[in-house]
Length: 206
Ligand SMILES: N[C@@H](CCC(=O)N[C@@H](CS)C(=O)NCC(=O)O)C(=O)O
Image (cartoon, rainbow, N blue to C red; front, side, top):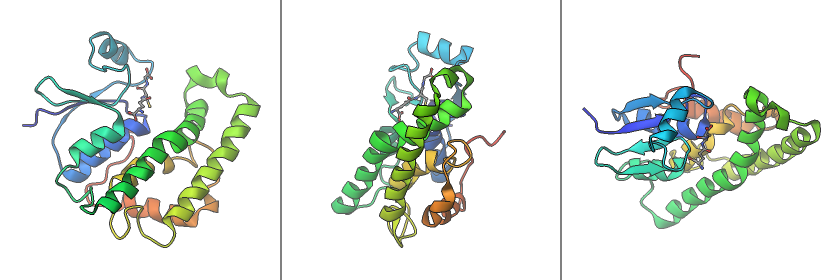
């Protein structure tokens, strides 16, 4: 029986990263779903279970609570093959993880949110959506070129950069409205990640 309790938002890529890594590692945990706009997330915020008011939050069972999806990935992956040993490879992995939070998520995930969450619809002006579309295509092109001929962002094998980047990229077409036909390398990479043993979908129940 694991002491890990994950407060995570079922529809969110940031939360999904953590659920995906836990599944790929075969780790047991208790899942507390806290969907946006729900009574559950309001209660979790009020009780201090989401210390920064955001999901995911990983409760370690000894009173410690971790926030920030990519920091949680780093913690959970210690000692596993998901973090390369070589410092240069680690730095490259972290570089993609910072890119994901600084450049990718604020554009690719935000455009998807504005299309998918009714409470944000008033922010989805034509001009803003067009701007996010162009910016997102440029970000996805950086990924396409960064991946190059390699099977994974980690190189010959996937690392945490692959998990961080996969979360919002695999739904960029359907949810974000981005033209994924432009990125054959990314499409093949998405299929490779989905074929990893232990893989789970973003929202397995629909
Ligand atoms: N940089 C943070 C972002 C966390 C974040 O913004 N979470 C959003 C969902 S993606 C959230 O919990 N929003 C609170 C709400 O919807 O009430 C991370 O990667 O964990």
